[in-house]
Image (cartoon, rainbow, N blue to C red; front, side):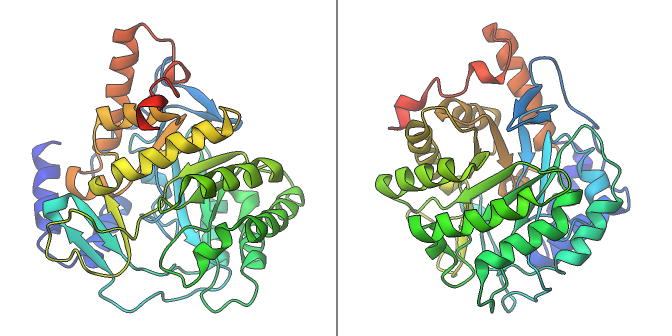
Length: 353
C-alpha cells in the first residue's frame, strides 16, 4: 500500500461505512485511484470452468452491486470480477445503517438485503462494457417480496446473461429472509433446474456458479455438492458471510447481518476443504472468506480452490491488495518450481479435514 492509498483509506474510515463505500466507487470512476493494469504471467494464467483467467485473484460480489465501475475494476489487478447481486426489479434493501466496520477484528458486518437498481440497469451496463482479458460475471439474486424466487434467478440470468462472462446463483446471503432455505437438496435442485434452463436459452451459454454459506454441516455440504454436480453447475464459490460471532472484539459485533473478513477465514476454508473432498476434484471451487494476504490465498488454494476472491480485506488493506496477492502467488510458484496454480490446488486439503 502506497502513501496515497494509506491516506485515502484513513479518510474513508472517518466517515460512515456505506457513504465511504459509495465514495470509493466514485473515486474509481473518476480515475482518482492508481491502478496497476493487468497482472498476469505464464504461471498465473489458468482456466476455470472454461474461463481464461489472467490470474486467480478475483473480486467478490457486493462491492460493485450495480456494475458502475467495470472499466477501472478490470484494470485493478484482479483476474476476474463479479458484480451484483442483481434482482429482477430494483429494490432499496434494508434500512440504514446496514454496514459496519469491525476494525479491531479486521471484519465487516452487512445487512444490505440485495439493494440494487435491478436487472435491466445492470444488463445495460454490462452490455456497454468493452470486453477484455478479465472475465466479468454477475451474482444473481431474488427480490425480497418475490413469490417465485427460483423464477427470479432465471429471469436475471435471461436479462443479463448475454452480456456477462459467468453468473453466480446466490442462495447463501443471510440478509434476505428464508433465502438460505433454498440450499436444501429438493429446493436447490428445483432452483438450479430453472436456472440451467435459462442458461440453455441464452444465445451463448455461460458458466454458472453456485455460492454457498459457511454455516453448513458436513452432510449438508455433501448434499449440496451432489445436487450441484447433477444439475451441471460449473463451479462452487465457498463461502458467503456467516451468522457466527465467536471471538469478536469490536463494538459492533452484535449487529445483525452477515460477518465477513478475517474471522471468517478458518470457517470458510474448512467448508472449502470439505467441499473439495465431497466433489473429489471433479468441480472447480473458488475460495472466498477472510483472504487478506498472500499466505491466506495460498492456503485457500491448498484447501481445494482453483481461484480466490477478495472483498472485506480491501476495506483495511486497499485495492492494491489484489495485485499484491497475485504477484505473491507468482513468486511462490516460481520459488517452488511449480508451473501453475493447478499444481497447488488441494495439496493441503487434509489439514482442514
